Image 1: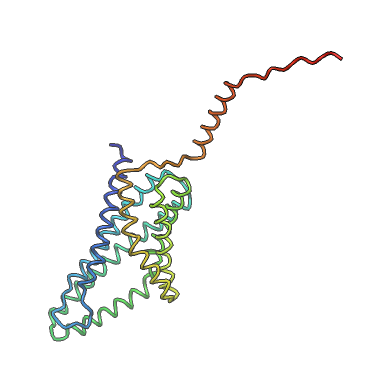
Image 2: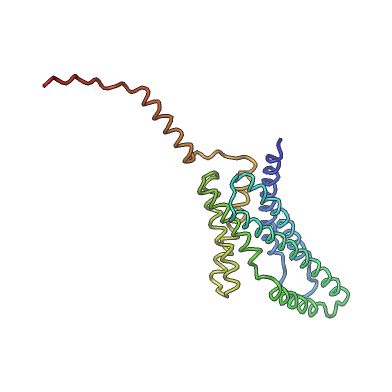
Length: 255
């Protein structure tokens, strides 16, 4: 197996595992208790949620070169969007691991002071959220940056065309939805943010699952390219020209 084939195969495995981790992390939110709940307050769902998101982002770094290898296209916009997506995946992993470490320290301090554990938890969470809103780019790299790369890849794959239609169309909608999440969070337009979030929750695991299966088992696209159709037309024209018999002309009568 060549290096390119191994890269695509590992990219397919990464996409499938990312879809499973995302579904598991979203399902885990059902076991997360509210902050005003009395003790004992389980903290393992919060930590597991952060570690799952960090692992999913690290797998996204392995997904980008596999997608470009399968796309077989070169464009300045594609290269730039891939760089933005790499920064977005890396930033997501760093923030998730940082938040998990912060929550671990917070829960250890809360466990040592059982009497004031709830107040320490609420104060720590508010301080963390305030720091996150002030220092982080409000999701532009984590959501809009990754969404831009998905949109560009899907648009190029749709124009060539080299990918299945279901994969490219879902990628176009997913990329626009991830940009709506960051735009709605920045402008305060709640409807836009919720609309993008709902589409993201549905299309992100579907796109990863479809992409992983495509990288592992590529389906040949039946739509031929323009150059292929032109070569076929020229070859058909040459065959018709060779088979055509000359038209017999009657000699003109002398005046």
